[in-house]
Length: 175
Image 1 (tube, rainbow, N blue to C red):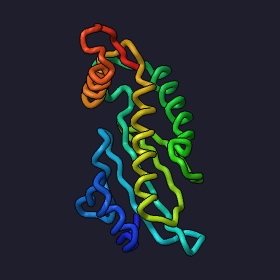
Image 2 (cartoon, helix red, strand yellow):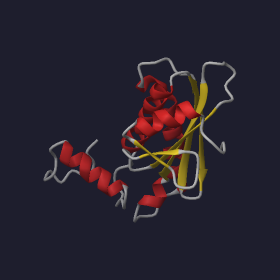
Image 3 (cartoon, helix red, strand yellow):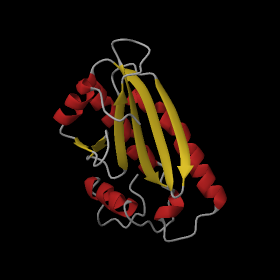
């Protein structure tokens, strides 16, 4: 992580209403998602006109948000499917974005990291936001039915049910 953000990136993220500066570091935290999403930028691109952006999203592993025990086969299958689906994030934006994706398990979190180069810092902030929202949506699509979910997933499921008009249906899954 760089010690200081390039000035153009800092201005763009400061101006974007979905981000706040991270306490104690040269990063910006996305405030529009339930999962921790942090973006940094550095001036080490191979092209003169672009900066390199790195988005890290921390989502809880399935077993970390269920009151029930989750078997290893279910957890591994869920994680592998989650990682595969995240490869489609560039399709969530109208721009052609080449990304490097890394998905790892760290303690009770699935840690998703996208790295990409972009020339326009304002657009890069929007791309990073779209990727973080894609991670959250992909996570929610992959929630396995039949478990008693805890925060933050239980609240996200309740919100999805309410938005879908299924508040009183008794259905266990909205998606």
